[in-house]
Length: 221
Picture 1 (spheres, helix red, strand yellow):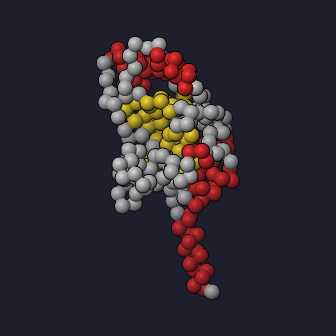
Picture 2 (cartoon, helix red, strand yellow; picture 1 turned 60 degrees about the horizontal axis):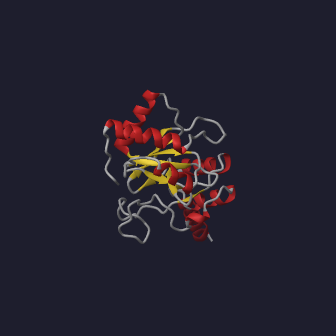
């Protein structure tokens, strides 16, 4: 009996090991802000730059859904709590679009320069998510038709821009992925209400203008 109880305690201890701030953040996103989230696949323990998914050439190790798939994203408190109780170190993945924010991302160096330029112009931005290689500016939900019309109207759109819309995803802070930690470059303001985010038109117009005018031609990755 002691052996069984001891084994059970060890199992419970392992289950609760990890980072308590992850479950707290996941619950805030899901229950307070109504952002559907799900756990990302963990980096491969044999090499953090590799992903735990079956793709040996995965380009976003640990920063994407796998099991469960993206359609499982939810705002249900019980499900979110169950996921991160059993997978306490899992990255937090946001299912973008629908009622949740979308995002416009670009390589980190170009993003840093673009944000500085937008600050000088006095443009209001919402939260900005920073990964080691790319930063993502959260924007209001948009449709693919809306995005298509917006991009079609432009003479030039840098190929380094990425759009995380309906059916997309984005790893959120304070996740750890195969490329490193995810953090807030611009953190949401404290409070229980869902953070304000700008329209995609304003962000794309400003970012394209800054990148074109300043000659910051970011690499396309």
